[in-house]
Amino acid sequence: MSSCDQFREMFDAYALGALDAPDKAALEAHLATGCDDCAKSVAEARWLVSQLAYTSPESAPSDKLKGRLMQTVRSEARSSKTASLTKTAAVPFWLSAGIAALLLFTLYSAWNAHRMQEELRAANERAALTAQTQRTAAQQQVAAMEAQLALAKRENAILSDPATVKIMLAPQKIQAPQLVAMWHAQYGIVLTGQKIPMPSGNHVLQLWLIPKAPGAKPMPSEMLRPDASGKFVMLVANPPEVVAATKALAITEEPEGGSAAPTSAPRWVGAMT
Image (cartoon, rainbow, N blue to C red):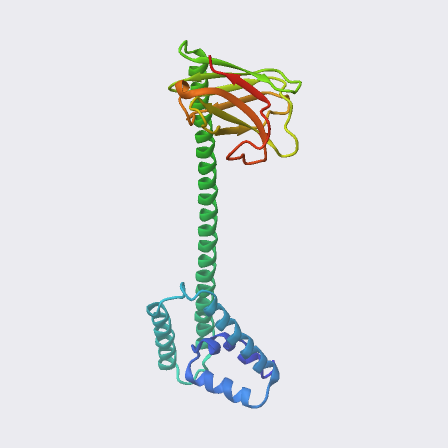
């Protein structure tokens, strides 16, 4: 057996500071001879202890636990010395190594538990965020459906009420079908048409209310583009004028976003009767 073999089980305990005084002195004396292999082993043991300690600062063993373990080491060492002063310190070797291994395992277990706890927390946060996103999307979908339902009910009330006034808007200098406006004093105006030509570029079709008052300017209202099939359905929930004060309805083609005053000749016009 080489001179280094007797020290191999001391390195971990030495790195932890758990080696008894005679063994510590013997090991340090051996290291002082310049043994590179043992010096390297001690350095590796110290590095492992330091790394395990730093990986889990929040979950490290308590001072009480470490003190209890060290107290056990010292008590066992004193008992061994009292029982046989002539024997070597072989028992403290294995005892110190066992305690060192226990401490190392405790440190690793604490670090591993901390890591798993962090992973679980992150997983719970991701699940909560996904659930919140899904709830928000569902709420937005429900709100959109409720808004569409409210518009459909309003349109139906306008179209079915006998008190609704019907206005036919005839095309002016263009080849296009008529538009039909249904105006209810309480619910507003529904303007419909089929196979309506698409406005040029990004232009829109804008509704104007022509007041009866002499010299009054056309009042701008809603704007819309037909769909791909030429269907045109415009709901004006709050017309800018009342039925009795309106002389006619007109539709012009305006730039996207609409205009405050007509910029082109009317494409459709319908007089109130």
